Length: 300
Length: 253
Ligand SMILES: Nc1ncnc2c1ncn2[C@@H]1O[C@H](COP(=O)(O)OP(=O)(O)OP(=O)(O)O)[C@@H](O)[C@H]1O
Ligand SMILES: [Mg+2]
Image 1 (spheres, protein in one colour):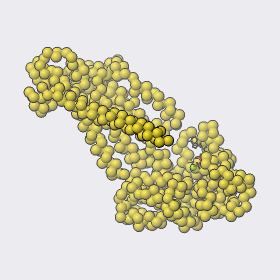
Image 2 (tube, each protein chain N blue to C red):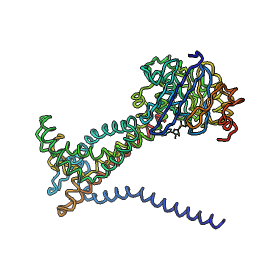
Image 3 (spheres, chains in turn green, red):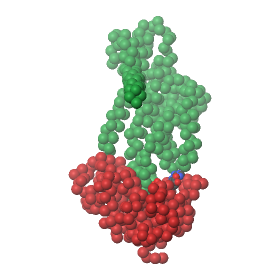
Image 4 (cartoon, rainbow over the protein chains, first blue to last red):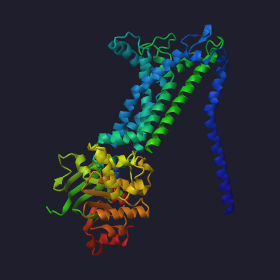
């Protein structure tokens, strides 16, 4: 008896240690990543002020000018527009699937959504070139009276929106499904209509979850490289406008890293671009956490 | 139809997919009396309550056949607004589900939904109904706090107040005390006894002792069928059916 007890205890201890180590790795990984990127970009930061890098439009590595504003701008625009397109679509689809559709329909949709979120991004990129780019250059652009090649911020956003839709939708469906049916029944039995119930009870209850789903979507969209790179144009001399080509940060890094490394500080500049990417995603996540905590305090 | 009958269920059948859940239910529920529904787990008690409230509409896979007359109006085949029908019935579930808002808003939810916004009247109503469920003294200083901060027993009383606030004639309660501590459950039970005579109350319970304490009328269900229904006196002292006798002896439990 005693022996098994002891051995179980030591087993528990072993598992505990093991799990703690894993946890520490998970906690330190982002930190290490951040420090690594920072150290690598130090060379550039020593010679140019952060302000100049972040807010200058001049990108000319040969002249040693590394203004990243155009890239940051492109990244933000592509992401924001993608979320503006995907967010409402996902929200309404999730409401429909969980609140109105038959269970069998949801069961049928689940694997489809999973498949969509598993498609490699290069495939979305090809699809973007074949369908979205022509659509933008032939129809959407002219409709707004703009001339465009189609390789543009808008095309990037649309492809991105399609890509993150299954991802966000999956999370939202889970969130709506965890809201107890009884809560809805309570609201209905008090004389609320179904739509009133959704607005006043379900959305309210789901709001923290919706915020995290959107944030995860943003983080994902912000870092997405391949598919966006294929349709966004990748031009460094930027003009502003959604029908103009853009050059988001991930594309900048992916296109240039490993090339032209003889140019001084080029390598360091790309690392700094990665660092910005990392920092913005981190900030987004912190901000949404704060928002959720604040909100939960209010209703909880 | 008998004037003392509030709810009359005729040949009610309910299917979920191919499963026959409620089988040929015929029930008469007396007006302004407390009716208890008894029966082993899974026999369809909750489903029956939800059918009365048309909450079954929520589930597209559920098919309902038959008639449910409430005051001679067949609520399964009516042009009347379903929200009006539901508002006529307060619902109390096994676990309290406070709405995600503060205590005040929980009680006034139904009133605000039907467009009543007058602050003074709402305040007045909140006090009235919270007093009616013996919660007022405990929460009067924190009406703006979120309802989920209350204890489970308090939440259940809040849910009762919230249901009463839309002024129903019927109260449906599905094992309303099974998740509560003895004192809270005593409070709820006493409230039912106090209300009795003013509302038509239907309570599902697994506790025979509770049933004996509160019931005027008893319905016993087994595997989706109503086996026996009778006044509480007759039901407990002189059961007719073999199944009822077994149940009362505690053989199923
Ligand atoms: N959504 C559903 N899909 C399929 N079957 C269901 C569904 N809801 C209920 N049932 C089935 O209907 C039958 C009756 O369920 P119900 O919840 O009404 O029983 P109950 O008498 O309330 O039981 P308990 O005392 O355990 O609460 C059960 O056999 C249950 O499995
Ligand atoms: Mg039940």
